[in-house]
Every structure is written in structure tokens, then in C-alpha cells.
Length: 572
Image (cartoon, rainbow, N blue to C red):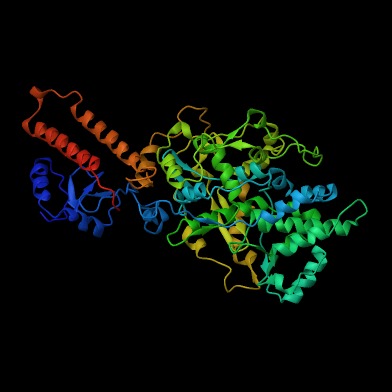
């Protein structure tokens, strides 16, 4: 028998175990899910084993995926490098929306502009307001995001932010013309003339760089320009475009460099009356998916994108992580000045009011990570939107339009194309979840960027995906409503346990919050169930000698395994 061979024959386990104990400790390993006992750590690494706990000088836990066919990029995923040495490392969150909220805070926006923004489809974002970002929460979510599936892998199953969440939380239209076109290369003086025509001012050359316009220049212009009852329609339109462009570059599609907005979006703001025909919500979700995919890869240390809407999504669905909201604010109220443009704000406005973190973990990534590790079925809310609530009902008047929320289709934003896969999270729509079909196209799309492609027509390049988007209503998935009974098919959980990464937190000791107990409690439960099943209905008189030896050896093996785990040292 070779050193790396897994011992599966029951009569050989005890002898092999004693022999293995004489090997150098740093070479030993335990296959947590194989029922054969010890294997060589060196051999396990050569074989690419995923579920190995090393004992002796190197002790660590990597619980999944047992079946790497779905999460095939685990080797490059950020979760593989989390250890005691970087336990509290968090992503740098790049946000560019401070200027626009300062503008609204110190300058009362005229109702003519508000009405114009509402007509363009962006006003719901302003009604939701500003809120601080918990970069520790964002980091913990990124660690569970999978670029292969565009879902978060939680202990309770796959979940994700969908077109439904974008439209309900921000009131941002998702069903419309794809946001794409030609990324035209222009000289700075050409951009100055276009800005003068559409925005009402020609930015200084220092505010223009590589097809980007400084958000500071937009903010300064809006402060200086006053809109009143006597302003012309052109002035109102120009001012509204400035605010809309700041919204796009600051909240919806913020550039990772920060502080600037891509001027290629201006082509879709020319006709104020047609701006709402575009699916800005679907473009926003595509952008968020791309940022999550990039940030979840080893070597990345920052993330941008519409992260506030992601935070609201997490707060809404994970009660153990959400701040407290006073009961009177459970439905978004009117503005202080009695907003006549949008009397009922979108769902996301519930969270802009005063809330408390007294009973909630915040700004502590190791605690949040551990909470996600421990998550139980009743700690994730699959259905959070009450169709009778004013802030939900007012945004979804047409039932036919809401079916696009369940469309398995590409989401397009110029060069970015990301797949929307609600078929993997059917419980979020009250439907029964079965094993989803394999996800495709991810790697191919992630390699595509704007770099080196100026004067490039992305509508032509992505014409195949755009054809799918045009057929989005024909790509809607459906399954039976579960009504709280059997929300998943019988084989789903068994399949999911095989393909997911079950735990993220490494084991820690010493000062501070100690993480990593969840995997071991899970293993104890699993092994105890195996042991109980072996003894169930056992009659000593009716069993053969070989069968009794197998039961005893199983008991010894499980006891030895749990002993090793209980006496682990903290090293990675």
C-alpha cells in the first residue's frame, strides 16, 4: 500500500492508523469526508484535495467544495487565503457619492428639477438618501460571492441581489433598452463643447481626462447655477442632466478610480423624455456584479459600485446583521417638505432614518464572517417585500413588467456583460428551488474590458447578448410556489452541500473575538449522526464478527478524528 493511498477497507483501518501515527506529524492529514481514515498531506495536496484538515505543525480547515464542478475557481477565490494573519483585513470601499448628497443637503433643489429627475427615472435614489457604508459587512459578503454563479454561497443555500431588489429598493427601472453604444474617443476641447451644449458649462481642461469628467466640476457648476420659476426649459434640462450624471457616476455606476464619471453615458441623457426608456437598473446590477466578481479574486484590495444598495439588500434579508428600525418607520414616510413628486419613497428609504446598532454587529469583519458561518434557515429572509406595502405597491403597478425579475438573461452596460441567474435563487420569489442548470459564459465575459478599445461600438460587439436581452421576457423561469412547505426539492440540499464552501472563518485563539468553531460543531454533529446510524437496530448476536469489527473500528476512527479536532492548534 502506497503512502498516499486512502485506507477504505474496514479491517485494515486500525493497523494503518497506528502505522500512520509513526510518520512525521507535519506530513499527516485527515480526509474529513472520506470514510477511510488518514491520508498523506503531501499526496492530498498533489491530488488537489479540498476537504483536508492537517494535524501536527500545520492545522487548518478547508470544508469544500467537495465537488468542484460548480465553484471551479476556488483556488483563486479570496476565501482561500483568509487566515489568522489577515483575519481583520478589509476591502477599501471606493465611493463617489458624497458630493451629490452634499449638493442636496445644502441646496434646495427646485421642484422643476425634481420633476425632471422623476421623469428620467432617477428620483427614487434621492428619496432613499445617504447612509454610511459598513466596509466590514461588504468584505464579508464579497468573501461569499462566487463569480462562477453570481450568487452568495451561504449555509442556507445560494442567494443573490436580483433585478427585483434593484427596482424595489431604489425605484430604478430595470426593464428597458440596454445601456450601451459607442465609446467614442474625443479630444478634450470636443468634450468641452458637448458639455456646454448638454450640461450648460464648459469644464476646465484639468477636469477632463480620458473621457471622464470630474464630479467636482459638476458639483461646483450646480452650486453656482440657480434654477427658479423663471428659468428656461433648456436651463432646467441642463441642470437636470448634471444631477443625473452625478447620480450615475456617484451612486449607480461609480468609477473604481473615484471622483469622475464616464462621459460616454451622456449620449443616453440627450433627450430628457427618452432617458427613462433605458434599463438603468439592469445596467446598475451588471456593474455591481462585475465589481463583486473582481473584488472576490485573490490580489484585489478594493471595491466600487452601487454598494449602498447591496448593504440595504443584506440588512433586509439578514436580521442578525441589520440595524434596528423604529416601528413607525417600517414604511417610508413623506419628505419633510411634503414631496409632491414622489409622495411614497422606494423601499430603500426605510433605512435612511435613524436606526441603531445596539444589538447588531457592525464594523467587525471577523464577527460578521462568523455570523454568516453560523447562519441557520430562519436567519435568512427569502421574501421581504410585502406587495401591499405602499413603498412596494407604488413601484410595481404592472404585474407583467415584474416577470422580468425572473429572467435568466445577460445584463449589459457598455463593455460589461454579466449573467442574471434568478433560477438559482427561486426561494426569493416564493418558489421551490431545485438543482439549477450549470452556469456558463462567466470566464469569457470577465476577461473583456474597455482597455485599448476606443471608438468601439459595444452594441455591435455584444449583439448576441443584446438579442438575448431583447428576448428577456421569453427567458423567464418559474417553478411551483412552495407556500412555506418544502421550499427546496429533496435532492437540492444534498447537492448544495457537495458543491459549496461551507465555512470561511479560520480557527483562532488569543485576544479578540475567536472564530472558527462552526466547522467543528458541524463535524461533530455529522460524525455523531453516522455513529448513531451504525448502532441503530444493532443486535450483537445476529452480527458477524466482521461486521462487529467494522462498527468498532468506525467508532475508534470517529473518536480519534474528533479528538484531533478538539485539540487543534491555531495555525494556517
